[in-house]
Image (cartoon, rainbow, N blue to C red; front, top):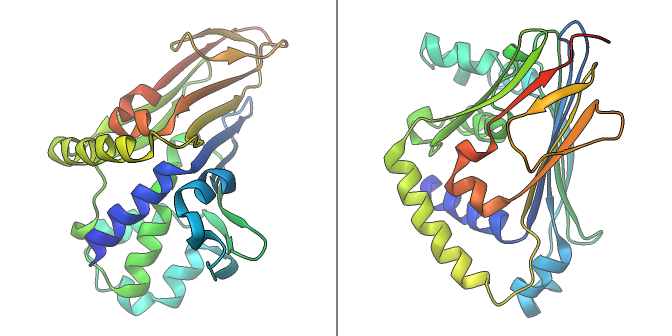
Length: 245
């Protein structure tokens, strides 16, 4: 059931969604990261058709991942030591989930403040792991085929994406091809945007499609969401900063 539900969610997400990842990085390596997943209502309305007006859903909740661990501590203690350590990495993560068919707003906001960006976990898995704790699911049931991490040595910032399940990537890519065909007749929004702000001017960026601001201290890179799911490594990025403030 969970496997089916996962791919149902992925299909819905990719067909009518905007995802943005924003990072504010300070000189000492501290900062804040925010991931926003937003359902584009115009896109969803095209796909849902008559069912759009029949939708009835309302959720508006905010929580810290550490509170989930505390609330389901009995379940947490059943996991192996490495799995518990994985959960613990998310303790500084906060979520706000709003799904309102009445306000026509479906948005998930995941945020974390950090002292060192290398400690930031893969935020895109936050809700899955919270779900595992709440429902006592095995982590082996997860269908993640890539991992996102970050690095900053004072001059070079890196967004690192690694494939961790080649077979899973191939299966997901086939499903996304089918999805692309199904939604090709609609004018849907499927954007994935990286917005990064740095304490110094940008000297170079590994992706030439990135747009650098006039003050050269921030960049924006917009990609097609379905493309990034079929080729996650395309979202890897290396940004070199100038040495002078």
